[in-house]
Length: 312
Image (cartoon, rainbow, N blue to C red; front, side, top):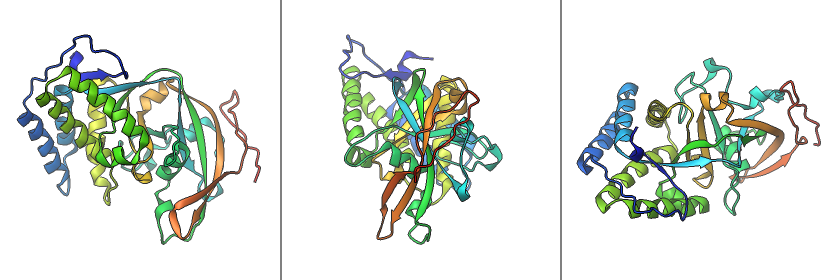
């Protein structure tokens, strides 16, 4: 693995004369990107080809990496038909692989842990982000169900998680205060270690995959590209890796994270506790919600189970 394939970024850290040179030409980089666009535009994209093209780009270009630590991740699950979750595994990745459909970073039957960063601003909430991402029907104006129930777990980061940052999407930069502060630091770092042509290669690479990770799609087939990218990442860097990306269901105000099953199994996260919420939609504005807790904050016991005490 080349040291130039990962940029481990810290704000304000001096470059100490470090220079980076990307050997592939801008024409080669754009050719791979155009091939990905052509393939994903087909009625039946070839996943193996998508993954191979993604791997070629990952091998040729540096990736921005953050080590997530000393924080936590929120993961929400909808309580269907009055079900009540009572075990740690209920709030982790889906244990029933046969029921898993194609997602933004997973194939059918592939177990991936999806969560949200606990950011808070005037337009963003980690709690709302994970609820919205786990139930797209909240935005369905023809739905006659105004009340839904969700359980949100707080997962503490117990070991630093190597996280690929895919937040270089114009809409996200404009919508999210957090991304608007994060991205310029990467750009400043890149500008200090590479020339303008190599900077352009990186920007095209980051913007392309960030855009696909952040957009809403009418067809889930578009997810094959980002899933191919995630699999190629794990092939190159190892299974214990995550991807940080903008939340499409919150119009890019929130931040999502996808972690491989192996990262969870290796103990990088630990469930601290969970709470159940009742979410009531505003019928005149389906992007407005009343979110209130209907249980106390329950801590898991030694047997891995937790027991809610209802307060509503």
